[in-house]
Image 1 (cartoon, rainbow, N blue to C red):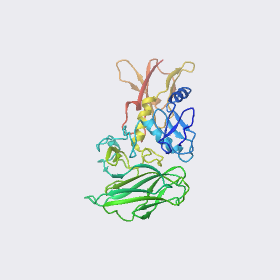
Image 2 (cartoon, helix red, strand yellow):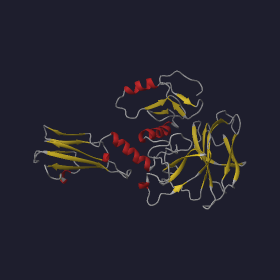
Image 3 (tube, helix red, strand yellow):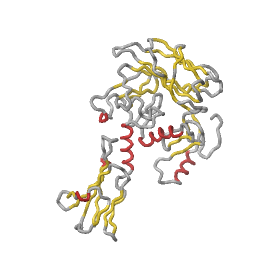
Image 4 (cartoon, rainbow, N blue to C red):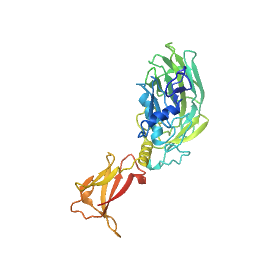
Length: 373
């Protein structure tokens, strides 16, 4: 991670020594490689590295890591499929279908009733990238007072590298050891502090990280600390307006869920409803529901080729001058039919795609094409 190697694509880590972004150093060579597969819509580069890292953009970058390679790839392809920014806090780009500048969110069609607004306070969140063999890490923060909603709740998201067992590192809150849950591995990982038995009192507090097993690889990547109000909605998959931040003092807007979506929670294996819908819209802006429509001259068969999607509805019409299209219900759902016993002329097929993953349909979900024989 600290030594620059001369490789074909010139991939390198940024910042050096971290398990975070992997940058393309030789874009010219990468573009030449992509041209060898011109039909590729979403190129993927897999770095020859056993640890977490990646990037979205022109191409998705991940690593060969068995533990984190697919985790990173899902997230980076999420950027590329949906043309969206981040949902986690501390990022740089917040844009696209999964972001709203205000609580008047554009995904209201995914909410039954009023949009619930859940606004946490972001208390601390620096990317420290500190090796705990050098020294303990203390994160000081101010916890807010009780308000009209009641006592706020303390929450923390911790990211590590090299914490292979629960014994490697101890976490203390105000000198009291607290338990954390997550996956222990020598790779990058993510943890949460287990629910506390009591509410923190307002004022100064310290979260401290101490190495127990001195093997030289116990790194604290970050500790993001929050105070959530009593009305904050932690319900899984619940769509609402959840605030996001560039930094503790700089809000960036709102995201659709608490942490269902892998665009925020790297350990998740699913996208939220808003992201799924947006991806369908983006895909169908690139790909038509009709691949081919033609007539087989020898067998006199009209044939239709479409993507293999469940939920496709096929409808056929006969077109006559100065008349509304005549529905041919006997042909509904058919991808081929004989022209025998059919009068010569112009016909139309309508292909419509319906899925529970979309509520706000665009014109690309219903397409038509005409044919004559």
